Length: 108
Image (cartoon, rainbow, N blue to C red):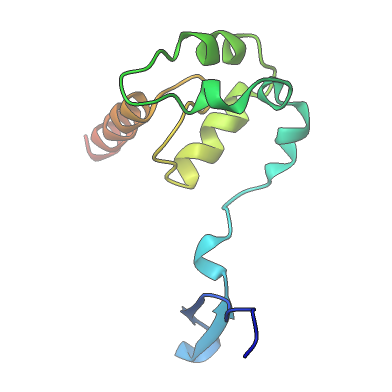
């Protein structure tokens, strides 16, 4: 028996309404992640950006405040519906509030 497992497969709509099996399609991030090369968080302890529930986000947000790719990071998190951690200087709760404000502004 092989020690390798099958890759996760998902149905993806293809041309002419045909469905195509594609490995990891639902896991592929949206957008160009090249901004990560410039991100200050890459030089910082990653645990600061994923604090325990109720833990402080202050250190992570301080790093984000001086980062030149903060906007790209936030855009990436919003496009990929990141549900954990500090992205672009915002917590999940803050990103959720921002999404709601954007939807409300679009529907008004």
